[in-house]
Length: 605
Image (cartoon, rainbow, N blue to C red):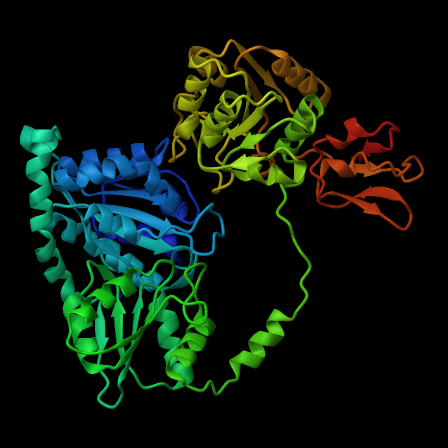
């Protein structure tokens, strides 16, 4: 009997990578993909190389280089990271690979931790690369392992689309043996293939087109696609990826008889779709996000000499945004085919929707240094200044009035430059995290200094990549595996990029930080403030414990200066008109510096 283990979806994917013989794994942290590399890097015994790269483009190129040398490789990222990696992706499709290469992209339907909901399947179509779309964590593990062989057979990278519910769901996973791949890497020089000058690209593009039919035929009868035709029903349901799990459960709950097609690979299995359409008069397509399968089904149905009603993306059926679930699928099936819901879900849904749930706005952690930085920034620049920001946990500073824009990774500096170049006269102070600055902010700073943007750039250096799970970055002097390495000096880097005003501050020293921001505000040109203080969670993990603080209510006059800091550890008693500190206090001391009445003191040991 094979071993089984209860695993997080991303841990199962990591297991699939080593079962498939992956030897070089690179990526950039991004929820919901981060735990894949985290799992691999934490393994004490390993015969593979793993790294956190500085961004997704770099990560894909590292994995591509390994695959060019005949080594099985993997690159991981979240869906928006594929935008960053799209440049090499499109050309790599022309070049192809020697060793199997899997591009793992985790989509985030519902925007749980993302700025958009884009559908990675569109990139599969755009790049003409095959895509695997698992329905369960078990399928995810097994698919990744098989994807290496598929990639090598067609000498093309394979896109693997996970989603939040696959990556962060948990399941019993059946384990297989680990592939002991002893193939020696060897890069074979081939200018016509590896050097994509126009002459060579014009030859490789038709070759990529020609292999598409072979890829489609290979996937047509893949075990990831399943067709069950009903002998007694003229309705059909097609479901893709994780939506197939919801659809199957909904069909069981409704006790509906229908032909059913489960899809897990792209290009789509046209023959299976045609067989389904030949059998039915009506068909419902269930898929998360874009009408990717639906568009193809409509195109295939147009070639058939038969009128078929096709249901899909519609406000009353399958939404084009957000995550799906069993109940959404039940409602869609009921509405499309007039199937009664014996469990009266509609009444249940009305009761749920009528519940009044208190709002819980996202906030930064108690003791987060970013809160103190934003407080000092606003004190120096004022409420009328413009505050472009970036992607990270510091984006939660929107509650502080210091986050006016958030576009994409590294976009805060360049957006700030654009606002200045538009002729805006008010002061501009943007914020960006340490990992995000190293990801795509460096070019923005260079562009700002080169083009003489009169802006202030704040690098929020909390010594880790906090938002995605505290992964290391080049500013920490530590590799993914914990091994020591070089530590980037942010001051030296910024000065080398042309910034003449660069000052490092301790944000918990609020008066000094305010003065530094004032000097940066008054400086003519591009100024940089580096707010350096370890993430409070990271500090706790390292054993740093500060004594909490207490408010003497007889000294508190209810001015709410400490409340305006926005720390969850500080509350206000509206009835008795005094502030109090709860058990969440981490002892950062920021509130002490705002109290004019010496009411806040450190708790004695």
